[in-house]
Length: 440
Picture 1 (cartoon, rainbow, N blue to C red):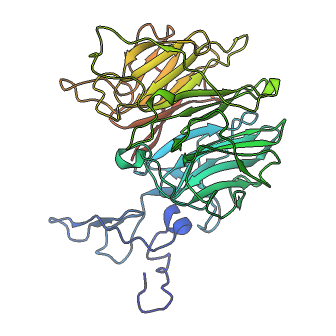
Picture 2 (picture 1 turned 90 degrees about the vertical axis):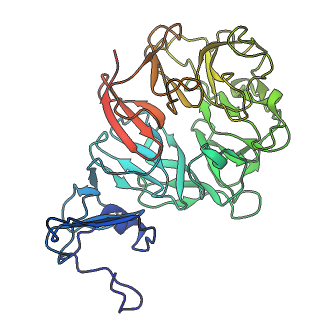
Picture 3 (picture 1 turned 180 degrees about the vertical axis):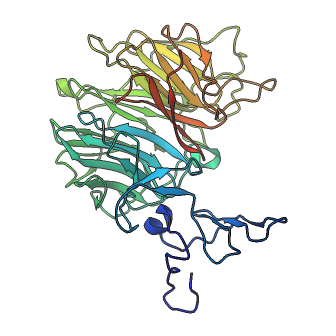
């Protein structure tokens, strides 16, 4: 910054290389973390902030920004495309591709909001809706220019205190030009100005569902013009909704209610809820019948399902929707009692298939639903519990660690590459995004 000019101006780009975060977020970064000079060659200097990494090889006369690599034409500017250099360190939550155009996809991220690719993941541009984080996206399957975002001002759900019910600031946003411009859909008032974690769009009915981190589900039946809370059938109190899924055939809706951390008063009401839209239902149905206690695996002093966080439904061709998976997260001293659960009768009975301490996502390969991917925190071997990047190829009967991925301790989600059946995208807390081979 040139501090002698008000308002402050950026340095001449011939002296300071501009990066994607600088152009999109601005130059106000004050979170300086490190600065070092090579003790054997004082012309080599480097420093980092929360937004920036800058290096110089000429004693500070000129500076490079190796944080991102320019992958566009013309002058570097806001809205241009960039490639990864592998140095990004912000959190990536979910990566979703458009259902009809596999070249278009969006990564929900902290700090920079989110990014969009229009070439299947080779290059990206920053596409922040408004607040700190975009947590989720939904699509108009007939128009690949349109995308909806669930946005909020607090990052890192569900790490630490970020797992609790909060209002904060946030909303639901819509873009009609692939994230170049955004329009706020939810009103800026006490009811709807709050953090949203999840979103789904039923194109047939022009209906949006948006999950909050405090008050349950907001719904719009006119494409976002008007909104109302839609919690009929859900429990009372704080309602955190980390995930919503729609049946691609008939628009039936599924969501998950997690624990009202830190009070934990709703344990018997957590889990997956179902809305039979196809048959005109207007009440959410709890898909929690008999949760079979893992006798011999869990001490009977513990109770189950304090903090369910993710789920997956078998939507594969020919499926009767009776197979549902759920992951719950250890968040109330329920030692070794969490894990991966499976129901084969639509939620009437649940069996634990795997002890997993801090899962954050469970993903089915809908072309082969016996193939399942898990992500979450790695547990230090020899201490307690299990975690990391795991997968099953036999419907959850056996599991393997996916040690091909160099990062294990902070996995968040998995996205199958729609353009290459042998590849997977992985998202991470604090380590952004990786792309690599599907495990055997």
